[in-house]
Length: 404
Image 1 (cartoon, rainbow, N blue to C red):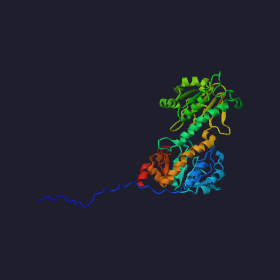
Image 2: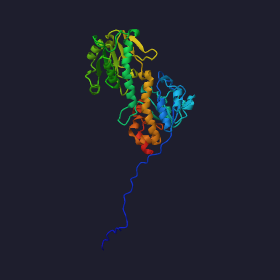
Image 3: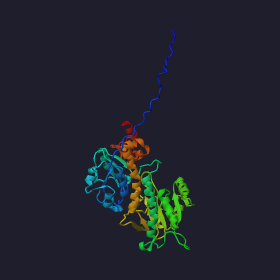
Image 4: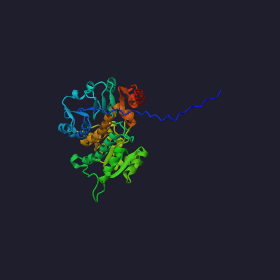
């Protein structure tokens, strides 16, 4: 039997089908609310009036609680002129879909949360409470944290900005407490012609340490940097552009340098748990009377054994004749600058959320945003939090894929 060949007519045209792509959803109008923070020493606000103006001009609604920006010197009038609605009642603020906070969710705010809300705020892991996390899970909250939020380059923009502020502020604070007016040794931080420069020891070569070193060098001080990570020391050396005295943390060398320094800065970081104590009580006791210790890592226990938590109202304690500054939230003391830095990150993020048609769509489109999500519709998606509080962990990628 003869095999028939396929017949192709010249009248038929063959064209490739269009590729079916993920269709971009239409943009949505957001209702963004900013409550007034009542947390201890929290003066920052998540969005500045200028940022609110941009959001309002893009079709979004922004509700700001009465006097929410007062501590950062942004008035209700500033926000009203930018197009925000001013709410007198905190309950009214929490009826909106998307809440922006500059402090973690508090016990007082838990009853005000609505089912299915989205919250963008810090976590502050050392003071996080299990019942707050459980209540947010129960209310099917979606939450992003300042600490873990990443940009397209893989960096944590808010954490970096706060670290830059803290590092730069450290030297201003130290200079203040070296003065005779604050019972310091009466030395000018830095130096002038014909007088040896003041000596600054910085423990930690991260962002805080780098910016503290930059400021100290700019003021004319002699700077020595310690860290237990040789890579961080190399990175700091490359970033600075000038030769800086660096060393690994070895007790004898550290003790010797602390003994003769005028200012010591604690800027060690810890990815989990407490900051390691590297400067013992004996080392501090050997320091020159009137010297200043600024322990930036005090919010995670501090790296000086003699450090203790203080407040903006009573910022220093004196031990062994050494002035100790231990305020945990240094950027909050420079609230206007810190608020502008946070706002610079959140405003473009909120515009993207609106353009993509909601946070869920943005998480689907941009993988880097997923790192900041620790709750997704009530499911805990941060592995470290699940381990810390012994709560069920769910992979965010699986959650998103299951809803497509």
